[in-house]
Image (cartoon, rainbow, N blue to C red; front, side, top):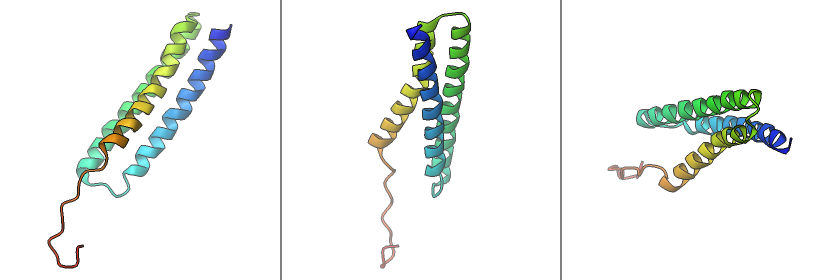
Length: 105
């Protein structure tokens, strides 16, 4: 019974984390170059599909009363979102080329 409640709670957290990460990635694309738009599009689709697969997998695991597996599947999208944001934080923004104009713009 406790694993069932934990699986449901983890799935709610996973859905909220996935939605938050998707909004964060969409906000990052406001002033991006075409190359960065392509990278963001790949990240958005991968997070969306990971969240969707985790949700569907968790529902099927709960239907077949595999509560431990449902907990792991509920945790996977959250771990993917945290990993992506951590990777984006440590890799940083691409370096700008120095301007050749006199005023620096």
